[in-house]
Image (cartoon, rainbow over all chains, first blue to last red; front, side, top):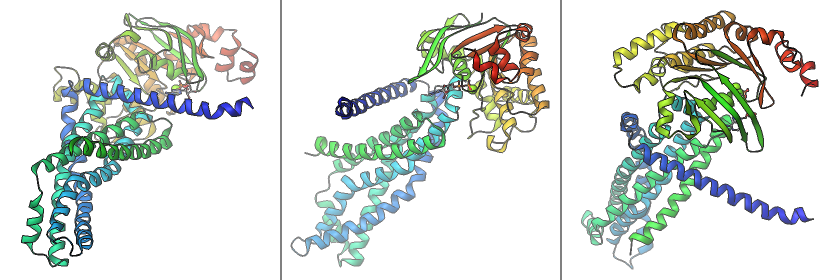
Length: 261
Length: 249
Ligand SMILES: Nc1ncnc2c1ncn2[C@@H]1O[C@H](COP(=O)(O)OP(=O)(O)O)[C@@H](O)[C@H]1O
Ligand SMILES: [Mg+2]
């Protein structure tokens, strides 16, 4: 009787404790990574390869998503306006939505699958096969060797990929409005310029830097926390994607509330 | 200088693995740790280089208390300690050459030419000539193990920790590795700790043998003392007689 009454309380207590412990470990990892920034001789040689792997290799998927997003945005805008609003606002809507929201967020979510899962699986495998321990015994700080180059590459390359995606999305919207909506280039460009502010691009960059740091560091976090062989690696990978997607959406709302007023 | 573990306790969650583990390894000697699977031999060894921290107790290596060292001091200490992992733990994104050279790259003054000469030398010592350009996935289990050994000895450490260096190897390769361990000690004065299940090996290579049982050292002595002991647990283990082990404790 007493036990069954207490069980939910215990369960909640356990969950709170393990959440606190996880936050503690995340803080430790963050601190370790910041301290490891000094060890340029360890992470330096790995920065460029990681930038290629995280950034350049992500371009195709990001552009694929942006292309179709641009097409849909332009069609939906014209459908919504149905003559009540001048058609050149299609350009406004495509540009604003792509740069402020869908470019960074859709790219971020896609890359949390591609990049974050990859990092979690790679580091998780290294953890369970004792390669992380081996780094330690050979006097390589794993934070410097594994975390720093990945997080730096994420912070530097996500904005590049997102800017490319923004551009392709707008171009796709433009092409769609010319070919399917009977708009002229002048109209589309007029709408695009109408409310454009260069601040929008900075906003996009700030967001994508934060998404890049999120995706890579969450991948590292779950990778290092891996226990229990191949199954554990699978678990770490899934968790990393779920958690970084959630953080991306929360950050998205946060930046909108803080920076768009 | 030597390796000393004093009253080390270590638990993972509810599971008590080490409960008052104490052991002294004298400088220049080779000590073998024997004991059943899962009793905590690897866990004990990881404490020596600070891969695990004791819940209580102390670990001293080379006159330094491992658990109070700063991160930098710990990496400094690890340069003097080679670690052979039970399952080799080779970096699978790198060739054997790069694996073996990893530790050397961290030492100032080692040019790429000098590193590759030393790497070749180490691969020769473990009988892996010509395998340097392969990736770990292209090696057999025994070859991986020997590559791991080559990586550990490359920096000529003062201490070498071997976690089951010969388990799963054929008798000839086992003899080669045993000879290598003996040479490390006699020619380079290396202090060694060897985890092994192979009693023949243990008798061949060890100055002293210690048996880990129930979280602590049950028995420690020279190979002759081990052969002559009346301790039921030790005899049960080395003679492969579970009946002796059961009535013990
Ligand atoms: N990092 C760890 N987390 C949880 N349990 C562990 C960990 N490392 C070892 N153990 C447990 O400690 C016990 C001893 O393991 P180990 O030292 O590897 O045994 P062995 O004597 O065969 O080398 C085992 O039950 C193992 O499951
Ligand atoms: Mg073991």
